[in-house]
Amino acid sequence: NGGAGVYSASLKKHYLLADDEWKEDILPEILDGHNVADFLDPDILQRCEELEREEGLRLEEEAAQEAFQIDGHELTEEQREILGQIRKKKALLIQEHRMKKRTAESRPIVPRKFDKDRTFTTNRMGRQLSSMGFDPRAALDRARSRSRGRKRERSLSRAASDGDDMDIDGQQSSKKLRALSRSRSRSKSRPPEEVVPGEGFKDSAQKKKAIKKAKDSVRNRNKEARRGEADRVIPTLKPKHLFSGKRSIGKTSRR
Image 1 (spheres, rainbow, N blue to C red):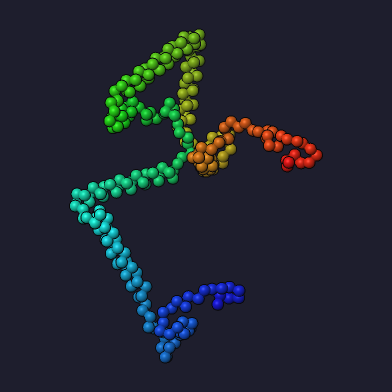
Image 2 (cartoon, rainbow, N blue to C red):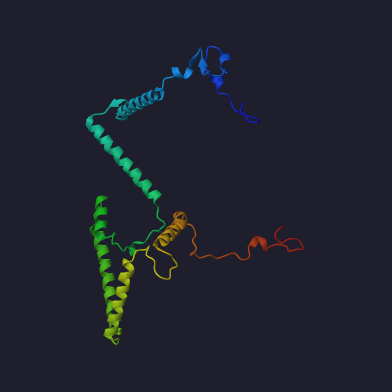
């Protein structure tokens, strides 16, 4: 019944009719001089949709009523409000976690000593320790004393280097510093998609596409902490299992 060599299961055998012999009958288009299609309700689909919508609303109301019940006990208005806040907070945490997981950047974790944005400060550390219930004064004093020591060492080294370079012409050094600062400011203000002569890109769109492909190519590797192309590799030039044992006339790859 599905064509030559094709089996198709008959769905008519599950029909519930008064006589089982009627299951395989062909549905007539004209019966007793009347068109069968004239007796079909044209709004049957719309009415089915309305019934389904009404059923869905009823189920939602029942679910909402059951949601504010714990062990069959009805909650008060205050308890409902607290429960709603808890569920909202939970949904926000789940959404935030999914965003972090989905937008996992291909950047490795940067140590705090390279924190250019100055997000890890002593004030932030004090607030975090206070929120955990610890007294942050000792930790803050220790961190500030270390930072003062580092600043003193840098100032001494800078003064020593200035004393060694007194014989350099002041005008030339100022010109070099001015040119260096100008080039640094220009490089920082340049967007990453801007094409620099000599990079080999046709326009900024092509460079942007290349940057995106480069990031996508290393995202999974960095997320799984795989060995990269810049990591040290010590190859095994003579593997032990191929260069040990008797070496007769036969193959050296099989023993």
